[in-house]
Image (cartoon, rainbow, N blue to C red):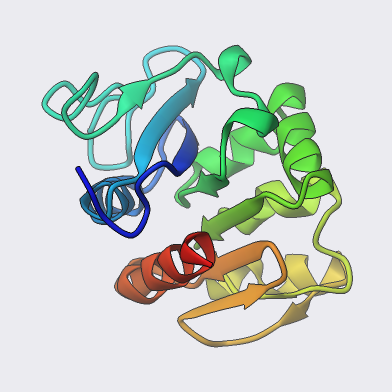
Length: 183
């Protein structure tokens, strides 16, 4: 599908009890702009908080995204790394492969986006210090304790980091991602 993001690859990583809408909406919105979407699940039998399994049967493999094993994701092959919220980020922040991919994407200046509890992964990867970020209010103290400046806005970009607050802010977050990847 042609669009502003044709030729761009966005990798989304989830773990059990991810926030369903925070994966589904960006898949639809970013693929609508022509991005190639790759989704990796860390763990077995991964399901969202509202029961959507990954891979999502009606969307996977050629329709809206491609399911990719986590170990096949490489920073040099993607343009943006994205973390939905929910409880999944609490698992991902303990996953060494995820943290190393985040660090390598940051070193390469790749865009890294997250929403809601997703910034937990950025905190644990050690890339948030000195940056402006937003997220769910329960993550505010964690962001500040990690050295970030918490900004209570729907979405914010600081260099290669793009963060969003809550599901209601998904349109603004996706617009920031689209804008960044279109530059």
